[in-house]
Length: 244
Image (cartoon, rainbow, N blue to C red; front, side, top):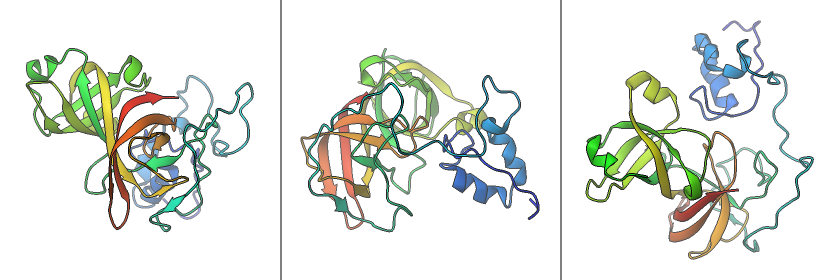
């Protein structure tokens, strides 16, 4: 890409291009300009127009919405890694709802850890799901009700119970490598890291949180039932998940 050619990315950080943020995608475009075709928001074939010159507002009130109360008292903020983020988070999701922390994935893994079970657990055996398989599926109902199809790679599988642990990777991998389709599944829990939070994190407490790589940038809620402090972060497991 020549220095005279400037393309303004939408700033939505949707992840559909395969990068976590528009800023990360812009850095890749410097050496791989043809990747710009991955940005669906710059495509002419859109169902509805998308602004391309300014990012979504990060502050302010959304018309017609009331501000929900915070579920957990936030009295002692933690700052485990102050250099992890370049700017102070405002702790609000894309619908202007407050949350307590970002859940980050383990750096040596391809994406966030999600503990799942198909609505029909026998599918795990029928599809002969093995470690390393690429899967797609959608978390239905009380387990989250997320409208986005999830895609990921299996890192643990129990054929007796049907329970699997996978890393959610986004849509590019199944498009490139093929996949097995779970259909509907239940999201039983998340595992990950907390580098920064606006309140003290305690085991046995329920918190609002936002998975860092959530394509919708929506807050989730979960009960912390495992907590381990490392030199750089808090390692947590959250179960009893729901969105909103």
